[in-house]
Image 1 (cartoon, rainbow, N blue to C red):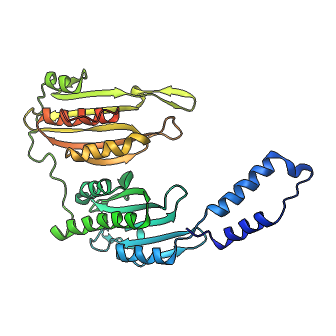
Image 2 (cartoon, helix red, strand yellow):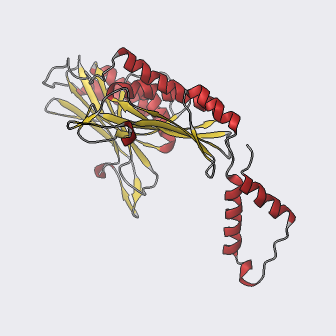
Image 3 (cartoon, helix red, strand yellow):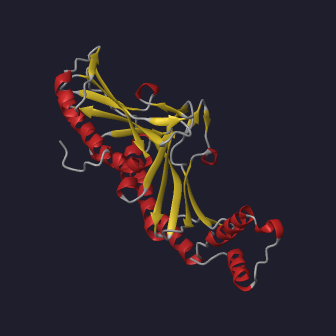
Length: 329
C-alpha cells in the first residue's frame, strides 16, 4: 500500500535531515513520543482508487473514502422492512444501516470492521455465513427497545486481502436478501412451540454425556462450570457469574436447551462455529464485566431436540473450547 502524502513527507525528512537533540530533548520520554508520532504517520496507508472501485463492484455499493484515516466505508440501509417504535417508523438513518469499513493493515493487506443490522430470522443464518467465509463475529445484541420487529446488530471483523474481505461481506448481505425474499416480513422464532409445558428430565444420561454433576429442580436439569478471572484486583469465579451454564428442560424426547458459554477472545470463533454447525442458535455475544483478566465473552444460546442429542452437542462445544477437536460424541 502507498503511504499517505503526509507519511511520505515525514519519511523523507527523517531520511535526509539529522535530528539534533540537546538538553532535556534527549529524554527517553521525548524519544518515545517522537518515535510513536513518526510510526503513526508512516502506518496510515491509502486504500487505492482501484481497490475502492473493486469493493464497490463486489458489494454493490458506492462507498465513501475518509482520506485522513485511510478508511473506505460502504453502507446499506435496511429500508426493506418497516420498523416501528410505538406508532412511529424508524428511518434507516436512525441506526438501521449495515456497514463495513476497509483499511490497510500492518500484518495483512487489509482490515475490515463492520456491523450487520439483522432481524430475528436472519441472525443465525447470517452468522453461519460470516463464520464460514473467514470473518469473525465479535458481538451480537439488540439495537433498540420496544421496536417491532426486533432489530439485532452483529459486529464483525476480518483480516486478509481487500477483495476476499469484500466478497465475504457480500455473502452476508446476500444471505439477508435470501431470507427476505423467502419471507418479506421477519418471522418470529418457533423455538419451543411444540414442546410440552411441563418438565421431567432424567439427569443420569445427561451427566454421563456432559461429564458433570448437574441437578434437577422442578424437572429442569442445570449444570455449570466456573472459570477464574481477576477483576479490580480480586479473583472471581463461578458464583460471581464467570461460568458456563447449561439448562435442559421439558422431556427427554423433546427438550429445550438454553444457557451461556464463557469464552476467551481466543476461544470465541471456534466455539461459535461449533455451536452453529450443531444447529444451536446464538442469541447474544457480549461482555459482562470491564477490565477483567483474562477478558471473557459470554455467548448465550438456544437449542431444541432430544435431550441426549442436545447434551452431546454441548459437550462437543466444551471439548472444542479446551482444544479437543475430535469427532462429535
